[in-house]
View (spheres, rainbow, N blue to C red):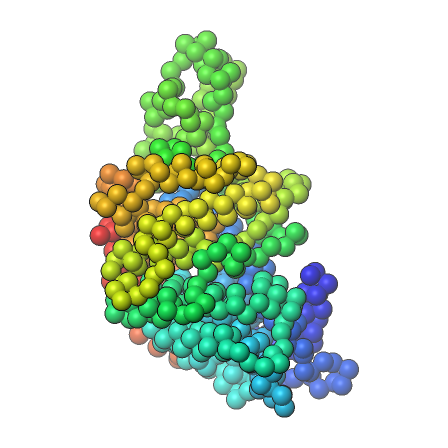
Length: 560
């Protein structure tokens, strides 16, 4: 695959497709030297776009996910740092390396005399465009799309910034049309084959991905138009192929040489477990506890030494806890400094120093750290995610007149099972600590049977939400979108309470103003239409000025 990607890079670079849309010179001209390829092979352009869905993510993982969004969602905690200008790599990756090639593929196919044979290849480009487009708008709101990448075709170097509603509506139309084409019995269709590094030309899997993306949009629509949410849900569930609900169909990047985090897993600060997540994982004996977090130093030998010196451990540690080696602390360190001090300071027993708090499981997030040889498997759209969406929407009442092919409990259990097996598979590939044994099915069945886990008819939606939340540990953008749209975990919940958090949390990031004299007018209009203060990146502003999908959502921790 690496040779294929290198060829893709060479072809795409030669064709001049990877420039940004910041100036006319980049897109208005093309080198006409006959020794340079000016009609690149669509297969390699597709490979390049797919590769660039993930190749930029080192910056995203280090500067955004591990330092910001997973902290805001309370999946982990770490020293708070400012939102630096290094965030938003997704935006430049989308418009620089993903979307231009997809548009070019369509252009090349439309120019073919036998273009009918390439319609499924063409349709798949829209699914990729929507996938990454959602990642961008989830944090940034209005972005160019309907007029984007028109510099070389119609010399439009000032595309409008489409509103989030326009984006969602456009993408729903494109996904529906793509599903129709990809599902159709069309004769003599060409395929990307192995140039499709995700699904290897399996059009049925592309349909399933498209349907799950429609469900993502449906739930983002919910705060604005519940009827539209229900309509989309009905469309997806009535589709003959349906969404991703089996592990074999997950949208996963699996490259043996890939590790976006590596030695930067502790960049600026170690990342630790929060009290809320560790408490729940321990209370349910969740196999993901050992996958997500590392044990502290309180081995039996250490406890004997502490006893020998007649010392008393801090009160938040219970000596009769069978999982004493897993300890979390406050998500916001300022709320409980008596406990938070142990993030950085060991417990001293004579000359022995014991770390009391659990850090994140570093190999799980960075399998090549310190010369290790594990592999980072990036599951970008999962079966668990879809199953929880279906369970959620059934529980909310969207299933009237719809064949959901199972009850909310069925999809909830299926989602938990998939999440545990997928997280365990990631751990195996990373050569990290696993949570399941060869008796995985029996272990998961025992977990599902616990009174604290199974749906009991009293707080079903919260239980579905929490399992959905736990499954997003390796999907930080989805995790942050989840806590914004639902308001869960919920403050003062008796089931899974959110940790107290005094720090201002942004509801969005920002889109930088284009260089002066380019597309400033459209950018300014988009800021005004969204109610944003241009170029204001202060926490105070970002915490109150919301994206369209988020306007009517609960405050953090205030879920209904």
